[in-house]
Length: 275
Ligand code: SAM
Image 1 (tube, protein in one colour):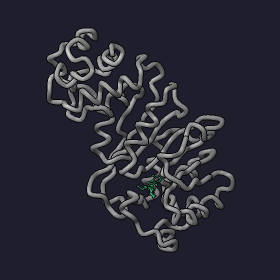
Image 2: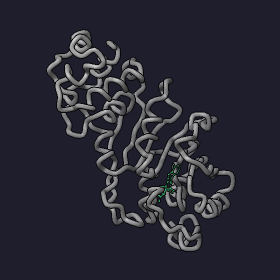
Image 3: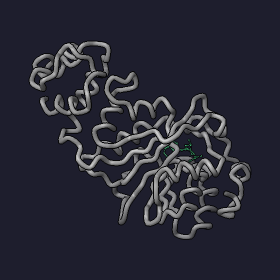
């Protein structure tokens, strides 16, 4: 893609700006621009779309998103060392890349979503990825400000996001994602595709909002999933004791002898609504 966008190869950018990867910032860079394009393409059409990206780093994914025609990219990066490299990309695509230096966990993304459709695409830093996803899944109002989330996670986290009942990976993330979205794993990326390589395989997860999720309070759903999966091997009459135990389960029409992982998303919503 160096030829395609006319910018220098990422390896050179990294060397020139001294961007040696920092573990504490979850820095595993994707330098293969064919792969970053594959990730960006998973988000579907990008024309007329504003893309929010978390952690652009040296800008491999950012470049792919811009080359695929996104109207604008708003990228939040915590590491100030990356800013000069990102400024080069911004110069190459005048008016189409805005970089915000800061911690994505403290950014109000909804307030940044001005006009037109928004998609979120990111190779997330492993230490804040799950929290960011939960923040995007749990606004009070639904449908959310975003049209889709295309996110890279450690594969094990991806499996938890797409898991449904009776699956070993099913837990709080699977319930929250299953309640409000259609989530699927798009493809895996092996460790050696990254610099430096992480210990585990990564996966790209694509989520689109479920238009009509079962009406249910976010706070109550959080309470029941936390309690139920906090002691996932126990019967629900035991794990849900602090929330009413057997009487709550009877009210929701659920057998108190069942275990958390056997409940569907719909049954978790019934529990939340019975609280
Ligand atoms: N997008 C680049 C790529 O695909 O090669 C880099 C991805 S790397 C896995 C994660 C990036 O997130 C790093 O650039 C890191 O500095 C940045 N980062 C880490 N914590 C962050 C935070 N709390 N807010 C914003 N960016 C963060």
